Amino acid sequence: MRLGYAVGSLGIGMVRGWRYMFATSFPISLMIGVGIWWLPPSTRWLLLCVVQKNENIQEFEEYKRDAEETKRQLSEQHQNLNTRQAKTEALLSQLASIPSL
Image (cartoon, rainbow, N blue to C red; front, side, top):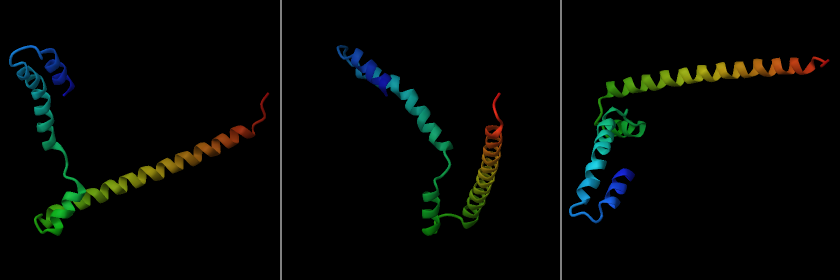
């Protein structure tokens, strides 16, 4: 967008210079537009579809299982982090109790 603005400001004195502005910003906009197709659906949208009965219940259950699996993995990572933090704090307290020479 800024590139298009810069090209547009450079071509302000040119006849039909606005075309260059759009031509420079169009490929980036196209890449963003195509990239949107690979974004996963949002949780709010999925729940809204289920409430409105526009979504297949099996597909919702699949998303729900994926969400629960992700939640379980995050919980395990959190537990591992807490364990590592406790071990680190214990090691630091042991090191602090060693008299320095």
